[in-house]
Image 1 (cartoon, rainbow, N blue to C red):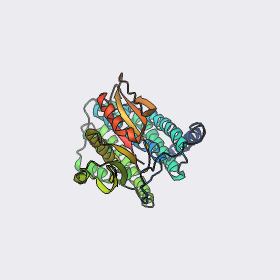
Image 2 (image 1 turned 30 degrees about the vertical axis):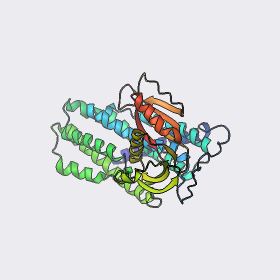
Image 3 (image 1 turned 90 degrees about the vertical axis):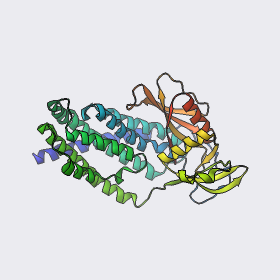
Image 4 (image 1 turned 135 degrees about the vertical axis):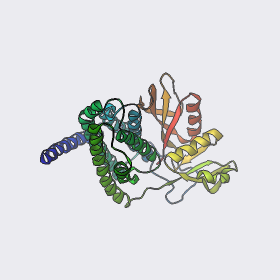
Length: 361
């Protein structure tokens, strides 16, 4: 039995590898910009600090990583109202690669792309494809069968799976996935979760969750060791209108590095979700942002109700597709001029839409 499972696992890995190789070839041949990149227009404020300027391509190319975060959030949404078998595994795999194609076309128009970042996107794409492929194959067969045998009332194991899915989705907003303690969840299942009312479903869930969380824990350990070789930078600097009150915002994680004259200041803020929050606050204050990490264009996503026209004069739409976590809402990817970023955020909010994320470099 074990030998047969290993054989099928080997076949799955081979076919997944072939599928990913074809996807990579498709991105590298069919998702490239036509023509030379435009001349750089940023760096106009005399900031020559070491490590201030970051590659402009990093903004759009950070989206595929965040797409995986959104997929886990969608997964948690599905579990709130149903079971794992209801999640669209193949659609999520497809959207990862189509979104990578879209942003790669933009990045290749902006200039050269760091090889390490491109390899990283392909590695996580392979991991995402393999994980969802295996999980989808299992949950739409064995998992669906045990859920049917269980009936409508979820077991304690099901409820724990939902709680972990929600915690994990929230965790990913600000921290890398490999820092999440999957082994803690295994202990939580074994030590703190009573055996469910449906013996077949409870036993199957325990097997599936322990296998998944243990495998992820091992993979996370490997990725964490690799990440130590190139630790993530957790701060980013921007040129903004001062207004004389920025020094009072240290509680929001904002540090004024120095005044630049003419009412401008160089500030340092957190990255990731916290950076989006800072910019949203700036929009509420109508505080101008002139440049971010030495760049004058940045990628954002907005969540837009169906039927709402979001036509921003300073933004170029890169993609639009439905958001599974919010029925009748769309996710729009927009390339925005940094000097018009605050105005764009205000226009998004005025339309009844939501700024989802600003993708720093």
